[in-house]
Length: 351
Image 1 (tube, one colour):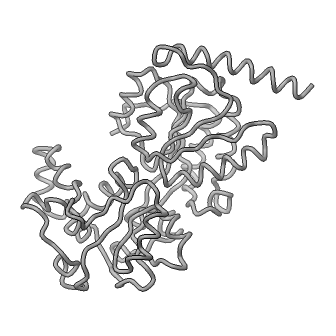
Image 2 (cartoon, rainbow, N blue to C red; image 1 turned 90 degrees about the horizontal axis):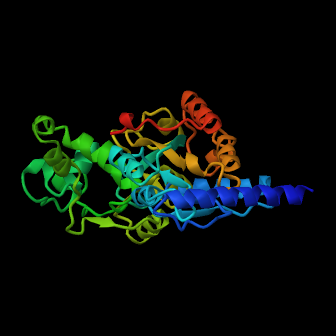
Image 3 (cartoon, rainbow, N blue to C red; image 1 turned 135 degrees about the horizontal axis):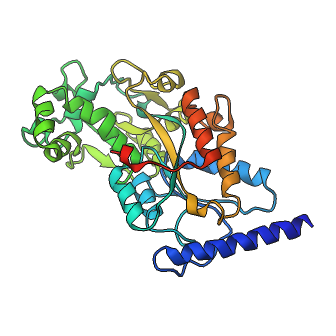
């Protein structure tokens, strides 16, 4: 009887999803009995952990498909339409942008549920035998910007060229690509903050925001910053082979590799569970998942998948044991309410 009930529910959901497919991208959606999530490489290990727990707690359900495409790439896929051919969830290591929300709306993805699942730190790290760098947003900006303060191409070759207190070690930074939410966080939390140390840049922001953004966030392309793809573990490996280099990735990857890596403090603050959760670390950032409300009834198990997230994001929960930092209690309560009520995102509050 239970098997028949499960089959009937799945069949009904498939029929509903077929209808969703017809209204997204001109139809041809077909059916799907598996949850599909795309997006952030930082959120990927947490989403796969939830997928494992979901399967354990829901016998007979297929394991969700989790793809690491980068935040920007994942949201782009998510926003292409409603229906079986499009993802149900976008994992994101930053908040959805207003332009992305507008793209979703244009493609019929009208009702989007936003859930903050936790907090992460944008960590700077080096090998255990590394030079022991200590950075600030200003130093990081002046080392990595393509056109520091709009005064011409970056000529700095060593960290000492940027700040006399640092060693004469060649600048070499392995970091995320432009499609990554981690790269967006690097731009917003570190580079822009460093750029704004110059009063002229604050004035430029008021005068010409596009020029300000290009000046403050565009990274040099002369080999000092190496785009290392969406696989953060690859950056960890590169630091082993390049002990004088610096890597930029999510805090969880630093936590997982403490035996071979050490933190590079920012403004004298190390990336730790305590400093990230308290927001004291300059690179602290929230982590999100975005869910299509139109798929909630259509995709078997989607509500249970969200419930599994909510049951495991507290301190000492399964996700924190995987390296994620639990969000503050008020943020967790708001997210639990979003999972329960399926309240949709108000795009007017996005930037």
